[in-house]
Length: 534
Image (cartoon, rainbow, N blue to C red; front, side, top):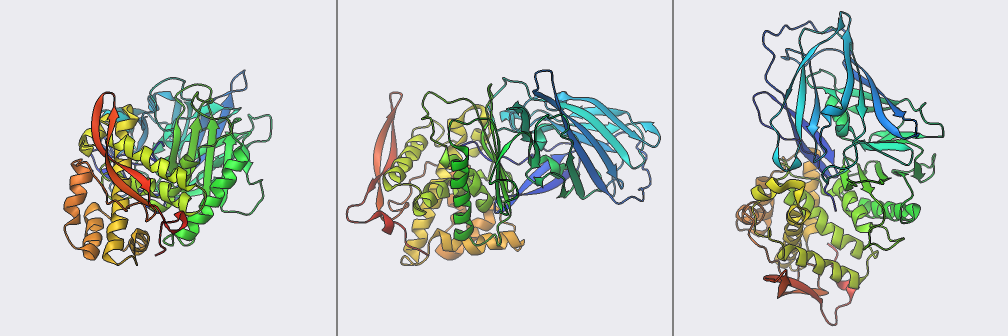
């Protein structure tokens, strides 16, 4: 399960641009930084045009009919943000383990009424763990609006480190990836609305141009860098349901997968409908888009969610996979991010919430919905427990896990696992305190509604206070001990429902012994009585 990753958080000698991106049920803070201001800047008067950022994307094909780049033509109208001095552009150097993105931006030309605009460039300090940092272009003279920007972004080459599928990669005659994997955007423009459009004339067969934001020509609210926070796909993609069907769930894919794509997307659509009914803090739930691509060469990617969408990127069938078996847990996990959302604050430091809550629901809700058997439910919980209790990082603080980043999946997933165990335990504590009348589901509803309405800034401290108000005690100390400092966590025996019980056990791995928990069925309690409605 590759994580949804949206945050870019850097601190250097410049102002911070605060980007808020809806991810699942909530908002995930994204911080972009600017480099030091250019010396002797001159401010130009804001032009009279309505601020806007208009982009046309033109995929190009090589002689083998494979997409080799996306050419971008953009026009920026309006002016700079109040207080801004020199006009600036930015693009990632590294974005979640995708390397050299800014280096693949070629043939850059920026012009205004006075002609070509020259730039100086500066890179942020590199960030360990494969996390994002940026290159900044600063204009050497004042610009007059409109400003025209054109460049060619080359596809991500094969090879390189593993990580989410943000880089643009060719597959099955098309191209796909995230905006952060190829776009160069204005850093300090006054625009709060962008328009995306496609030029698909390079393709010689019927093709789509679709993004997280919609099909074909779309408007994207927010500052220009908002266009980076979406998935992009162009080419002869298949889709579910068929074009023209009026639905809020859409799926697009490039390649012939080792499972039935339409059946898998029908399942995911059913889970979308179930989650839409189970949760009540998104009313109505927004449109949702799934993107899938099959790659011939690594890095393959995995599953990653962005706002109202996710990408499944994978390679050929692995030796341990069964042909025809789709990765339903991945679909469920990434889909759930829309409803679980996140806390405010450092995205990695708080992913015990975003990934932990998502993982908890990934295991429990498909079982409750009748899509996972009782035996599979118990087996999945035991696998998660074994993975958590036997990893060397089970008691690592989040600061150490963050340093590893995407270099080790076992370590990176520790916050997912101990977060899921924490939420399962919280469900048990809430039920005990209410004599079985109210569990996690009922507790979350008003909290997430308040987050969505903007009535609360849901930080770690605010979350902990909500829990303490109901249960008493010092929840913040527990949260910090487990999720910040890395205390090994053992949940209550009835954390995953009345029909199973947790028992202490000892696991062995690579000649070492680890104290942990296993989950066993409770005699005489039927699986359909495992959870009481609240």
